[in-house]
Length: 518
Image (cartoon, one colour):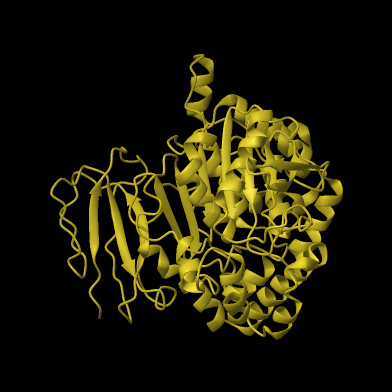
């Protein structure tokens, strides 16, 4: 059995009252390649020094909170018997779910019986004494429709989610009074909606395959839902101009009523603002009060005619300028940034280079390529469907560019290119300032201290079973106090699909993260 290592680092955060111990960790690895699984856990001052199987650590001051960095092999992560520490707090309080199911028994008995459901003794006493009990982390929904159950955003992570006050109890009663007309189906939908906001992604067994997760991210039910959502959204298309004259298209949606915050989103390579995951995520954010700007990178979406220059992944300055152009014309008290796949890579680099100028409050990257050299190798070694997908989308994009700018005259070169490597070898030296593909890919990597200039909180969410971007590359990122890496066991590439409706865990995770920065 390979030796597992653990490093301890003090932080200034105080222990959470609901989690005061660390479970012993048994890690079984099969090779030297390791992942960093970051878990922040408090240590009980009465706890004896940690006794792990591999003698991982013996803290000198157990009462301090520390960052526990576990190294677990990728290949064995889903098959080992490793006992991972629980998340900092349970995202769905048991008392809430229990209370909800208890109230279900009263639904069909009529509103009068529902209203007679009593408040707990502690809450009732606090109510009569006109004292304000601690607020619940998950207030009851105040709006419900038959087609969609909208839930308020989740609150800060430091509050005790097990306490209700009288107002929230009454909201729950009114909500249940409405639900009785929609039968048990609506209630099950509502409970499932609540449970989507967990810190840990736990898909059903039939959705644990990483290829299913990755494909369902853009195709199938999610694509159908996205098409319906696009027809319902009152989207405004904007053309944003960078300082060098580059023009980028963006889709702008306003939430009514809003919470005074904007989320800028960037799609992945050869995606667009109309990609299924972009549209459904935008809808979730809109439902929670966020305005959304879905920005298209150069030569993505229907923007090939706007700029003569051909897209490459090092063009972060024009994206930052376009965002600044938008922010100069709009006033928001909170600004957030989220990117998927290559868009996540862009988001982290822009946050490091221009985050202070744009004044972002938080940045989230989902499944970003950390080492693009290794990522391209991973695509070439992955299932043929991924190579075929990217090859087809890239060649189609280049043909559109050639249609609008025929003087490029690369039709013959494109016809001879039979793989991604062929296109890279031909087009990178010709249309970028880099001599070869390796130099080009290295130029937009996130390895080493590339993110050292981060001045805003940043989150990197990825899956250990990602079939497109090697997840072990996250170990190549230098530690940063503002960077949080969230490694999930399942999820595929940007998927994190929870059910056959293709609802994604990431959507509510974004809401949770952004709300924590209000």
